[in-house]
Length: 68
Image (tube, rainbow, N blue to C red):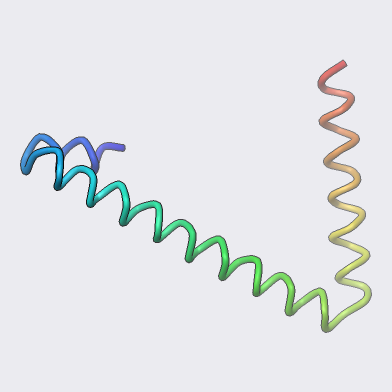
């Protein structure tokens, strides 16, 4: 946010928009790389799959309890 604001003030709306779009694209690439890496680990190990599944279930239960 600070970088987008700085670039907008320094170079105008177009520079701010370019900075925001670049940030969004970078985050998308990073998220996809993380998903691919996790997929490779899960595909290679049934134990890793079970751990991820149980951690996800625990997290969902925690969210449910916290909501109550």
